Amino acid sequence: MSADLRGIGMTSQRTRDRLVQRLREAGIRDERVLDAIRNTPRHIFVDEALASRAYEDTALPIGHGQTISQPYIVA
Image (cartoon, rainbow, N blue to C red; front, side, top):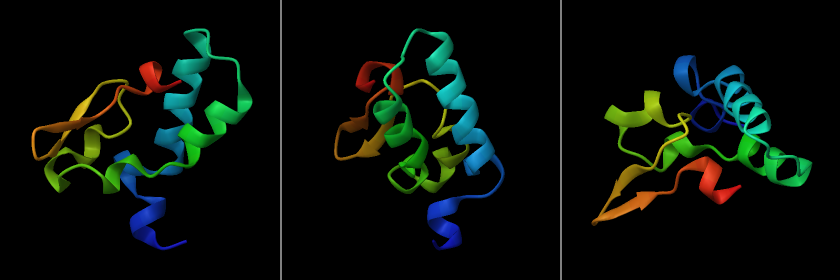
């Protein structure tokens, strides 16, 4: 997997794992859903300036008046 997809710093696997842990603590139990969220490189869908926020549990703009949904809502 390329570095762009794996991420570094605030887009790293550790950051993705923290998001999954927060979702688990919020009551999400389906491991297939949690695995999909863990493995989806959200940071490539948002503007580079927002990449550090890609794994927050919040919706973020992706351009053209659209947003990438809040992970909890998707789960």
